[in-house]
Length: 305
Image (cartoon, rainbow, N blue to C red):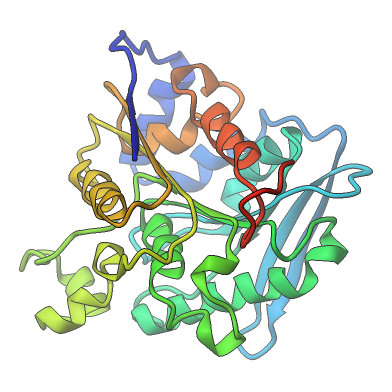
């Protein structure tokens, strides 16, 4: 395991960053994300939106590709929102940021509580990854070059796909078929769930055995893809202990894991740093791209990009 704490320095947020925090706290999420998306750079990017990947539930995904790309790594990004809210359209800035760096970004929607509990959104996530795996060449990539990435609740979803083989198994896939997992402030080790977290108890259950099924750290067996775990040490929504615990579990199995702890950075600032105006607040994008470029395709120990 490689743990790279950043040199502690003052992170001075721009006026837009302060405004972002105010909007988020006031519940104006749509306005916040619209503002971030208004600043992204779309020249040279081919975007395909509203592609149906699940006809039964009418679930859709958006794809962002570098124009004219012949082959590029694919990143399936699962957004956060406490498993109860969020929309793929809000995260266009993530798709364009990755595409501008030469990756193909796929952002799917998934069903949320109270429509479904964990079984439902995990099935949706696995279906989305399987769809990307099956259509990789059409997208401009390859089936063995698919990464999974997620923020917050989306990090928990992606990490379960990368650790618990039961979710991908119906599609004849295994976590080792993924080229890597990238977690941004993900929930990996969060039991017991406090009694006051009523939504989480409804989503993941009150019984310890039920809650254990939601913990990626419980499924580490030494058969996981490479992982990059990014975490702000000033995160008051998802305790940094989640990322540290998963990193230690992977280390104990001699797995390929890098944990980057960003000093002074909070929960949402970690993903907002992928947007153009806030990119100077944390090296999120640079670290993600470095990880993708430095890892061979799934199932290979010698391949290079």
